[in-house]
Image 1 (cartoon, rainbow, N blue to C red):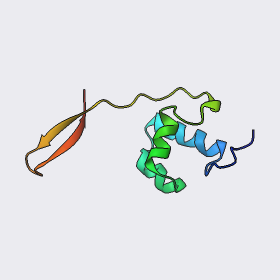
Image 2 (image 1 turned 90 degrees about the horizontal axis):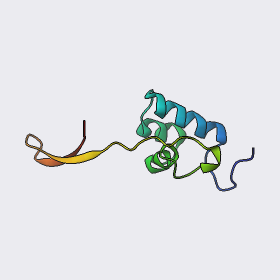
Image 3 (image 1 turned 180 degrees about the horizontal axis):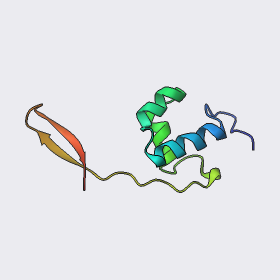
Image 4 (image 1 turned 45 degrees about the vertical axis):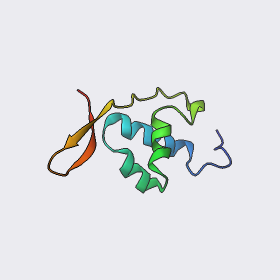
Length: 81
């Protein structure tokens, strides 16, 4: 299988990214740095928005809600349980 012409990643790299995120062994931020792509590139892969030809089961996006952090005096997004 040939890589798309404009792609910065190979098929094997995309499969590795997907497997590492799915298993919880790596976070998108770590993989973005490792493969020198943006975090949004990693997220588009794992959430099934790109590389659809690989027919990977998209991971579920975490449900986040804003919560005011009193100590830091700022809003933060927290994953809902």
